Image: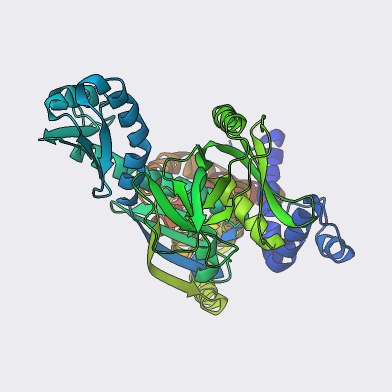
Length: 553
């Protein structure tokens, strides 16, 4: 009959208490956020009396998780970037040239001497001194091709080799360009994500749009220009042999070389080999540090493959200059004094502490494979965010009050029980969002408003069923018990179908759609729990104390 075991009562009360306790920090949002930031700074060995005082604003024994506010609520930066995928073609051909040179060197007796000719960025042209060896050169170079690893490029090779007269031309195939474009955008997406994560911002939105664009939204950051400084630097680091240095900005570097300016000394230019000895991709760590003179610098460490190449080159070229090139500017060009084993070193220059820290972040996160062109940038101020919050509050309060009044007028005391459960329901939604570190956006607030309306549906089904049982002549206890048991299947069916919709929206959608789906899905779970268990517990406790002969629903 109408009874609930003690252990079930304790479990229901415990779940409600935990949910409301997790939601509690959001009622003191600014205070808790400042305390959390101070705690993070203290953990990072930056302990000061002011930070200790701020960290003590919120008791350590209480939960401190907060619902993250999205860009439309908190303000922040919005960028739409286009990845210049064609930049990778030139880098690919530059890296491929040493293989071509080695392959042709092995058959020099048939092809004669060979020399690389000026060509577009996405191809290599080689002139043979013996045109009769053209077929041999084509056969040898075509053997260097590898299959394209994509479903759309199945059966195709990554390069196409053709020849006419004494010229051999090597191009990237169309299938390889398509695959390369996709890899480049994916790599840029991941590196942008790493760089933003390194800064420690909360819940950024980083997603691909179209074939070669990336949408970046970071709540809480000062401006779009600040965000561009973090992610826009390509940070391509190479360690390249120096051919010569001079002051002529128009000097011809020669085939296989490139002319790059000095970062520190204006008017000084270095001619370096285009094919580097080691690249930043082989770095495993980079940290801000100081050189032997106490000036800011960046220490680095290579992976085993990079360490071996770095060590071998320094052992074989003692006394030669060696350029550290960052984004086509020579940071420094020290002369190799001795063999450098172990694969670690230090980058010195006229850095400030902030610049050395930012450079370490960029190198640690990895180099962007291609340049980003920013097509759209917006700084969303906190005033706009506050307007959104106020509008969301008004919408939620109006919906909330309307539902509370309707339930109280329609169902009397039972409606008040449903209203108490509704208050607990909303608190549990915020508790669940805080627990999972969810982000609340305007569509998310819309999901909560919708949940407020849907949360009473289950109670309406139950109460209407109780009315029907009372009209059929059953007693109060029997009517209440039958009302809950017979309405259960309809409640479960209705909410399961809506929950499936929320899951599909979350999986297939992105950005605002996901925010709506998260709050809707969590709201369905909490509303079913409060309707089936919380309101029933309230009704049972009331019934056990009053033992009414008749009830009005």
